Length: 383
Ligand SMILES: Cc1ncc(COP(=O)(O)O)c(C=O)c1O
Image (cartoon, rainbow, N blue to C red; front, side, top):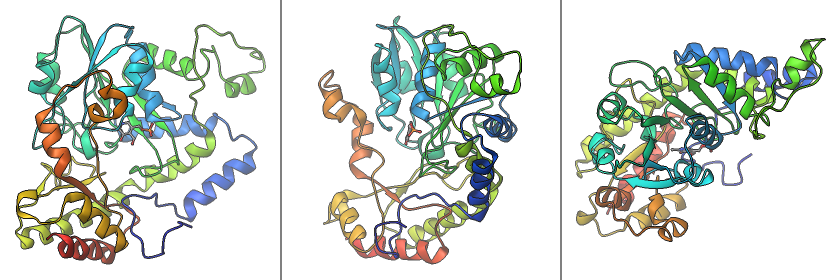
C-alpha cells in the first residue's frame, strides 16, 4: 500500500489487477523467472502492438538509449543533440559513452525539439540526435529527418510514447530509427522497471540482444532449450541490462489492457479540458492533448503566472496538502548542477516553459471522481 493517505491521488502509479498477479504467479511457479520464453513472447506482442520489425527488451529506457548510442557507433568526442526539457537519462547516456551533449531548445506548443531548434545546433561533429516524444506527443521525426545530414542518426526517446503515433499516423516504434520505450513504475505500461528498443534492422537487433547480456553469443534460455549449446562465447564487451520473465509476465497483461488504459486517460484528459475551458483563465495546454496520436502519459498545464498571486511551486505544494499529487516535468537538464558545470548555455523557450509548467495527475489508476477532485483543488489554488 502507498504510504500516503488513501485519498492521495499520485500523478502516476501502475494499475495492476488480479490478471497481472496471476501472470506473475504463473511465471514463478514455472521455475524460470530470468530472461526466457515470457520475455520472447512479450517482445513479439510489442512488435505487433507498435508495428516494429524487432523489439529488444532491456532493464530500463536508460539502458535502451545507452545501447542505441553504442550500436550507432557514437564515439567519445562526437556531438549528440537532445532537448534539455526531458528526464536526465536522455543526456546522461551521451556522457556515459564520452560523447558531448549539445542541448537544444523546444517548440513552445509541442514542448518537443523541432527541426529548427535541432538544426541550429548541428555541426560537422554532430553524429546523433535524440528527440523526446514529450508527455506522449511524438516529435515531428519526418521533418527532422528530412533536414538532418544523412550521416546523422536519430534515436527516439519514446519513454512516454508507447501507443502514440507520428504525424503520418504510423505507430511510434515503427520508424527506421532506434526507438526506446520505458516500462518504469509510473509509465502507461508498467513492469516496475524495464525498457525496450524497437529496431528495424535484424542484425542490429541481434547485436543489441548480445550487448544487453555481457556481449554473449547466447543467453541462458537458449542454452537451456538447446541440448548441444551449453557454453557461450563472449564476443564483445557487453553489459548486464537484460529483462526478466517476471517483468514480461506483467508486461504482457499490461499490453492487453492498453485500450482500457487509453480510454480512461482520454476521459480524464477530456474532463480536464472542459473544466479548463470553463475556467477561462488562460491556461495553455500541450498541442494535440486530445488527439488519438497522443498517449497522454503526462497532462501538462502552462500557468499564466503574470495573472496569479501564487507561484507555481506554491500551487503545487498547496495541492499536495489537499492530497493531489501535482508535480513538475521537467526541471531542465541544462540547469542541473552537474550539467551547469559544463555549460552555461541559455535555452529561452525551455526556461520560459519550465518555469510555468506543472503536471496534473492522470492515469488508469484514477476514477472520474478523482479527476473532479484534482480540478477542484487546481481551481481553488489558482489564485
Ligand atoms: C523522457 C524520458 N527518457 C528516459 C527515461 C528513462 O526511463 P527509465 O526510468 O526506464 O530508464 C525517462 C524516465 O522517466 C523519461 O521520462
